[in-house]
Amino acid sequence: MLNARIREDKLKLHGKSSIGARVLRLEGRVHHTNAMEFTNELSLRTLCLAAKEALIIDFSELTSISSAGLRGLLTLKRDLDAAGKHYVFVGLSHEMELIFRVTRFDCLFPIASDIDTASRMISGDLKNQRGTTTLH
Image (tube, rainbow, N blue to C red; front, side, top):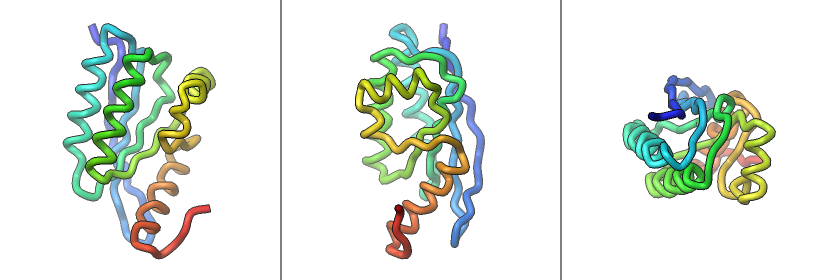
């Protein structure tokens, strides 16, 4: 039985040009018995991203994640980086922030406090890619 669910929303980001982002909202718990299914689901949704679509992953309703789930996030990072996709994690609870700090995942993944901040980060990344602005 899968204890973690992934809900999906579309988000329009507006900068100089309009870009789209897919928001994945993680819910529940990721542990050793469902981590493979969780990883496969994330990979499948990553494959479905449109050419210029960015990804925002919302952790606000994810209550726990095991080392197997963290390994799935590393797989996700590899896939997104290989595809040249922009992505940001948002909504980490205090417990999730601690896990990310201890495992140094906070150094591997871009993290924002909320979706608006993530949108600005992604917009800024895309502008930087075109050389029109810099992030501070």
